Image (cartoon, rainbow, N blue to C red; front, side):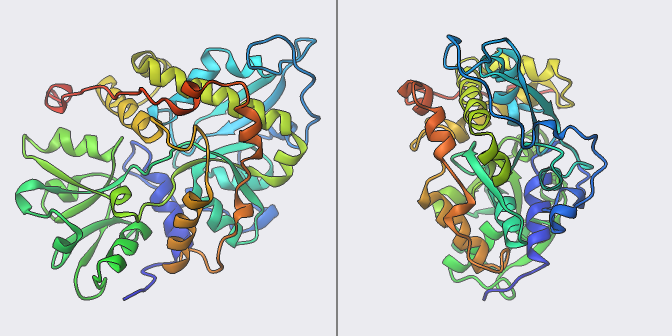
Length: 396
């Protein structure tokens, strides 16, 4: 039953990086770098923080390690896609001065179809990047020593959508159906098919889906790939009152990890205080967006998002649910979380060699969370907003 539908490492990075955006045009410039340290980039040289000296001793700034003499150390962060609520916690931490309190002058750079964050990490032109954890593993599989130092999304946003009147309730109902997959491949779906004894050759027809909901709305497919915070909203806006049903890979046990804080091992080891300070400030930023999502939506709009306020409102609410309430603590990546993703990527040919636990290092995160409250880390009382999509997307 198993087969690699396409060149797996390239397609995995393409499908899972570009789908986070709001643009229909995906580019293979967002695939994992495979050229090692010689990877080229057109980005300006802002790598002064790479291998920089460690941050000075802390002052009395709350939760911080700000420089006693007021000087800040430059750190660059490249997002995996354009400015949108998917990354609101980082914008909030910057806006609220949390990075400054840690002695960090953060250069926050939006991504896009022509930006390859993994390649920028490899070439030293960014210190940190937000990427799918799978992209870290595919890069390591190609010999690049990248690691995750913090896992942003505890849960996966990836879903399959179908119209409720199609009667597709469980994975067993996939048989005989046309399934839209980004670039024709998605390891979580392959893992689900394997778990439920479905042949990718004989039992389902794979449709090479674009990064939109056109194929679903035009009934070219029975099931379509979607992120809860992005394409799902597109489907709700275009469904014209027709009820949708979702298949959740988290519930099936076949989800793979998404947004993570990636960096080179060399940078993290050379700058432990900066790594810790960045993570601590970022957690505080996500706390802020959990507690005041409307303020974070406005902040994203003020920073030039191309998405309208109603879509950003939906996205902020959905992204918060990927983080809160946290069962493992904010920004944490456990061995079990790692193993599920690593096993799926290996089984379905996305990586050639079994991934190892040195692909992530939570020691920076563990140091960062010392002194933060349980509410900061767990958000146990978090309740998502009750949004009515019919009202939210009434004019779309």
